[in-house]
Length: 81
Image 1: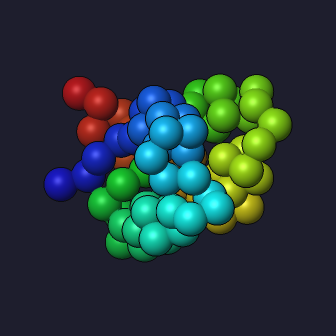
Image 2 (image 1 turned 90 degrees about the vertical axis):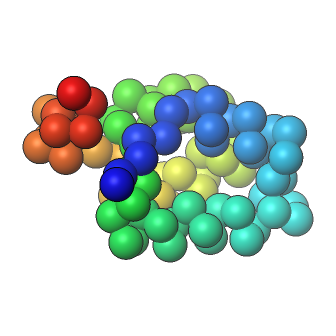
Image 3 (image 1 turned 45 degrees about the horizontal axis):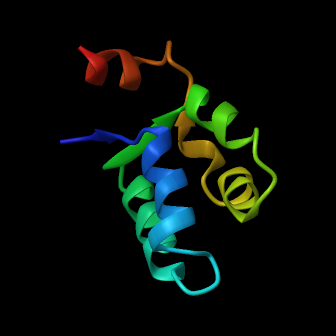
C-alpha cells in the first residue's frame, strides 16, 4: 500500500511535534519510507511548503524533493482513485 502525504502532515509536524532541531528521526523516517515507495506527496504540496521560508522548505527541497510527484504521474493517478 502507498500513502500520499498532504501539506498538513509536513507543516503540523514541523511546527508542533517534530522540529528540525530535535526531530530528525521523524524526517529521516519519511525519507526512508519514500525511498521504499511507501509514501510520497504531490507537487502542489511542495508549492505550499515553498510559500514558507523555514527549515521545512529547506528539507523538502533538498532531501524529499524527488518524492513530490506531479499530479499527472501514473503513481498519483492510480492511488488517487
